[in-house]
Image (tube, rainbow, N blue to C red; front, side, top):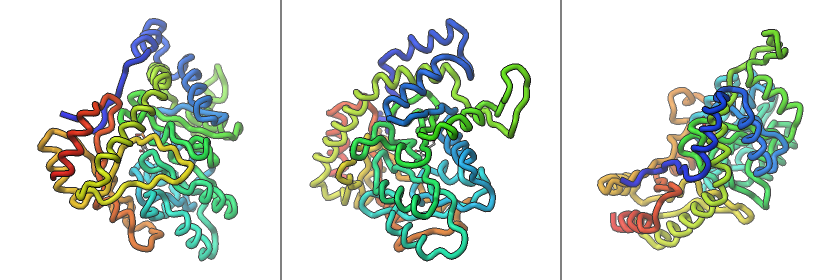
Length: 364
Ligand SMILES: *Cc1c(COP(=O)(O)O)cnc(C)c1O
């Protein structure tokens, strides 16, 4: 069987986890958490990094920390993982969905700008920008739009560790950003997340809120409603070991993506690829292509015991969000969902396996 994605532990994972077990530092305090935060901060160039239990909690906490509350509206992509919308929902704010660009599959900046120009009355408080599939779209354009309308930009960079645009890391373009270290992300801690920000006050606030808002080292005095969102030390140990291998993972993912592209670009079964804008260096989290007949390709791959994955069902098609306002011209997200298929992308994937997968797709 070729799985869609499996984690790769070939570094210091056992050593660092054993250190936690040997010393008893397994929980929400310990040196590995700080070290992991520092490793992410150094790698991404984000001045501050706050570790959390997962990417979803990181998103929720960031929105809370930015003051998002009931009555506010938050723009988010229609084509994203449900967690992006759910985090907005947890705050009591109202999601406004924005359609994708047909070429980059990222939030359509022009569409958002046109919509904002027409707004009368209060504007949305924040915009959460997902970097879809570890690629990036017109992030500076959206950052400028947000800036001129006084909207807080938060990046959902959950899939984008290692992705850069003009040398700047995904997650360093807005007020704050989140990463995820779930089992299927480019590095994993089993479950885990991280908030990136250049705002020291916000970073302190988020750290405080993530540890139950406990305001006194001795007394159990909590100065506001807090959350138990801190990443355990034993998971941070895994993250540290994974970070040491990230450059190699990226090299492998980029080489595999190039091979997939070369083998599929002339295939009649494939009708398109996600466009990479100039200056963007994607991590190719999951190599994804538009198929002429997604269902048949998926079934044929499954018969050969090869996993593939559909894109997310767009947020506007989910029962909880069907009533949300949807900024769109022709439901590009719906079309992408209907045609796109993600292909196996484990770091351990062999060249021969990629050739086998592409051969099956081409002859499906
Ligand atoms: C994985 C993911 C998340 C959620 O991260 P978890 O760590 O699984 O909570 C959020 N947004 C996007 C776009 C993701 O891919």
